Image (cartoon, rainbow, N blue to C red; front, side, top):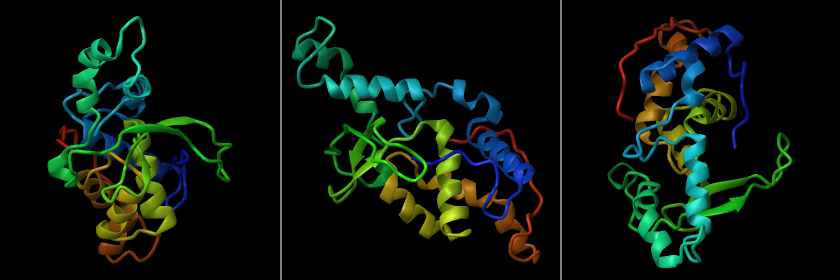
Length: 208
């Protein structure tokens, strides 16, 4: 899971804060301070709140046994729509019908002790378990890959790495992040490496 960033990748605290604000304003039409309270429409499969992911884990953990006084058939009937909507948009991700949604515990890293249970699915080749992110973690995940790990890489490189780690970050979100990246804008404007370009905030709600 991505750590929470306040600076780095060629951005100071103010620049990163402004970029985070721009990203969420364009993605959701909301200030970043309200993102953790935002509950996406369930028909938007690539956007999930923390509470929706918790509900998803509950469904997956009891899909084959039932719970809450419900047998398997009744439990599946109650949660069939929710289970289906956990799957990413197949037209955007080119996935087959069987995505293998499951839960697992995270391994320990330098920044985390591990053990946290997360909702996952398998990658397109079925070889790797990749994690669903809540909408409030999307910015930090993209920042970690684009700005920290790959030092402001191209959209194609960023998307390939995103697809290797996360289950629900489509290309539109990657594109938005890079198009609003102030360091990349500075390079395009001839400002040189690490020189942030001008930031802008557009409050249109986008359909990513």
